[in-house]
Amino acid sequence: MTPKEALKKYFGYDGFRPYQGELIEEILAGRDVLGVMPTGAGKSLCYQIPALCLPGLTLVVSPLISLMQDQVAALGLSGVSAACLHSAQSEAEQREVFARAFDGGYQLLYVAPERLETAGFRTFCAENPPVLVAVDEAHCISQWGQDFRPSYLRLPALLEGLPVRPRIAAFTATATEVVREDIARLLTLRDPFVLVSGFDRPNLRFGVHATTGPNQKKQALLQYLKEHPGKSGIVYCSTRKTVDEVCALLVERGLSAGRYHAGMDGEERRQMQEDFLYDRISVMVATNAFGMGIDKSNISFVLHFNMPQDLESYYQEAGRAGRDGEPAECLLLYSKQDVRTGEFLISHSREADSELDEEARERVVAQARERLRQMTYYSTTTGCLRAFFLRYFGEDPPRTCGNCSNCLAERTPQDITIEAQKIVSCVYRLRQRGRAIGKRLIADILRGSKSERIQSMGFDGLSTYGIMKDTPRRTIVYLIELLAEEGYLTDTGGEYPVIQLNARSNEVIRERRPVTAILREDLAKEKVKPEPRAPRASREIPEGDSELYRRLAKLRAELANQANVPAYMVFSNATLREIAAQAPHTDAALLEVPGVGEVKLGRYGRAFLNCIAEYEAEKRQGAP
Ligand code: ADP
Ligand code: ZN
Image 1 (cartoon, rainbow, N blue to C red):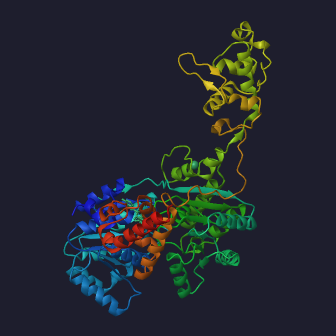
Image 2 (tube, rainbow, N blue to C red):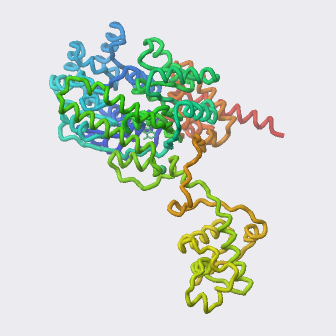
Image 3 (cartoon, helix red, strand yellow):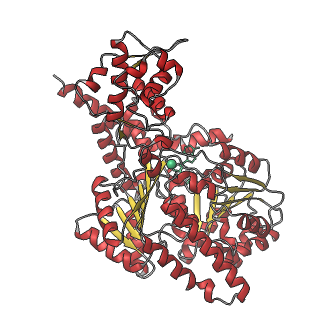
């Protein structure tokens, strides 16, 4: 099977994202790889596809049990045989997994890093050498990474004990150079193919909302939730106390919210996490203890109630939104206090009082301070937020993105009624004299230019002469262009373009209609920071038929319930919406929808096609 065939068959997608294709090719060619990509970019497929194409077993080392279970369940639904091994399983369960694995029953076997050290696992590997070892969250091997896990360091010894060395594919979202080098060195990668993908996630809208403190933040949060009812999202807070407080507030307001932090007992945490995954609660209020390994794909917003200590953490946490590629929002509620909290945490952090020597400690603390400073700049910049963090991650992005709160704020329409009246009047006066001239000359009249040309034509006698003398010429020219674009004037174009009145010009001078326009950034009269308000979402679910979508979603919920998996694992929202939009009638047509693979077609196709047919029949009957 070729990679593309496997992609279509099991996952229902038509094409790879660019870096996915490259990494997969290199892995299949037998080379070690290191893939550095942001959360949600699609790292899993980079090793799952080779696992399906290569003969033999692929081991996946993954740091979190919940993540493994999630992936195994999702793969199962797509028709891939996979299992996991971790300490939370009983002896009997583990034995069963081993037994099936010995028989070649799995294409992928996920293992928790601490399993690597057990004798049973070593024996298993020696007798069933894997063809590929994928190391997920590979930065866990580095002390410089944010989640150092010493058991990752056992991996090279395990590999050495194998009769044949498998290829190794390491993946991380941590972009720093030191960590990247650590991964390659400590995992003993051989001449690895290293690919660092772009860090932009265009479907995420970033926003910062400046507040004076906790009370305003609570208002902003409630407002946001009011505007996005029923959406699934995470609210990150910096302390357990804040988590408890904010969660209590939401529950008190009748919102469907749960909480998660390390101070809760394990059972309650597990329950909360599951409720969130299964959409039984919409909003999870949590500390940063929540989320690593949560690859719930339909999270539609991540709202930070407090500023994190660095952009690395922020981007990782915010990046949990919109993994399904749907538009999603990442909003940071900032207040000055957050900076003081950050400073406090740094000076009292583990590094600060650990056994590091004086010099090393100072260096670590200085680095943390610098990261906090950058995080603060991000929170207070008036420039493009996306451009800011992409530069921080070493990229060279365009200056504006058009999809962050600053870019959108700069594009707030401004009132240009007065300017419009002056300009249109000038064109009107000219016409009274039987003249039509170009925009630059009009600008000169309005500015009261003393040029010979103006005087010789007698334009200095016009009543509109000099009424915009404080406005730069290029601004007036730009405003004329803008009025023409908006249809209040006509630009004849051609070799000698002139500006003329048209039917709508009267709206400006006779009817005194207010004129607003989105001004080019550098010409905006005053950079108005928007009123502190949560950005509004522009999207609402259904393209296609919303009633049909609702029914399909209900069917999906039932099927998910029967299979005991979260709804998004059956089909993502994007897939569901596409089904509603296309309303396919045949297996072949349904298979065309991105996200519908052969196995899922076999499993769910009938039910969804029936649902569509029933709906259409009802609609026909109901029609007059
Ligand atoms: P990561 O591990 O990098 O955080 P995931 O592997 O969880 O990201 O993938 C994120 C989402 O992108 C998943 O919902 C996955 O199905 C989707 N995805 C990945 N590759 C593709 C592709 N080639 N076409 C369409 N969707 C894809
Ligand atoms: Zn922007």
